[in-house]
Image (cartoon, rainbow, N blue to C red; front, top):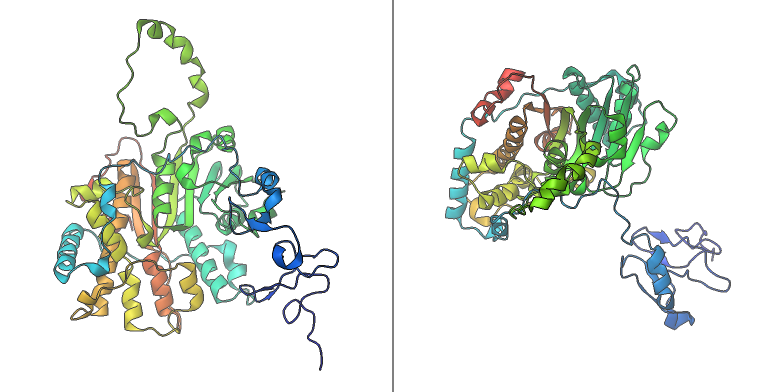
Length: 483
């Protein structure tokens, strides 16, 4: 009988571990010791007479020799590392208030039909007067023409390229592309959006990029620009703890900032907005409910000397504008949400927000109820933005069509997004909600429609001096007046 080929899939490679990794559907490729069949990661001490391996207490995804634990903890990649100067705990998280415990309520599926009808009634009353239909503004940019015409790109790559081209086209129309500025990409991932921004702005001078991503990412494209005139600086930090005022790179350049984001799911959008517009680089200026300490006479006499070094922290970021694709509203959180005042003005609280945040998934769940065919919901699309929202409760399935449930989900998204637009207004920005992806394409209409519903483009630019900052009542006709 012919022996299987030692290719690492049918049989282990010579001199490599014989442990079969089910998740990767191949044998482990780690080199084994002389006379051994398993690597140190997969060896079992009782079977091979080796030292006993235990899960690492810092990260149980890997193991370590028990007698070598103390040494390993000093160099483990999962150990707590010194915090960078721009790290300030929960600076962008938003204040903790007495309403937060209300979020621990029963799931939507456990609500009675009467309770759900009351929530929907409040929702329709809250969105009354708001523009519920946003115009499509599907643009493109010449920088991506070659990539869009490359037949080697598959459907998934082509989809993302079209979205990036539309984002760049809208930013160009708004005048956000130009010289002497720094683009801050939140949730950068591999950094492809910054890559195309750099390609699109070859004719501009003094343009730099700051990429923010909390995870360690492989195959980063910003490494291709190390020898370019533009600087690509990457920060591995959660947006929740990032103070832009203390980033050395930004303090050195002192350039206006343009915030961008294409994969800011749920609460990440609120964290990014607060990071750009509402965070403070001084620990003492965060939400504090303690009264100020009374100063003694001797403190007042020495105060001028203590305030002298403050000149080094007076630099304030200037935000020229922002363009963020919104998605995954079911992942929003009340504490991080920037539109609390918008909700409260409409008689809504954390209780209603928790319900609408979960019900927002009905915008796509309604489609799933109507058709569960894989033709309309490819596996790759569902993996990219996993739906973790609430399923449609049984109390609403009877007598309520899928289209009606989908409409309720859209209204939930609309209300959450207008709260963010209101936040921008309160900071002197003019904002615009619009669709930037297409719903056209054979056998792809529902896929792109899903992207359209989940990825509305919210853009803002700084208000000119002397103009009145619009109130919440001005938001309703906002889309019509700006288009």
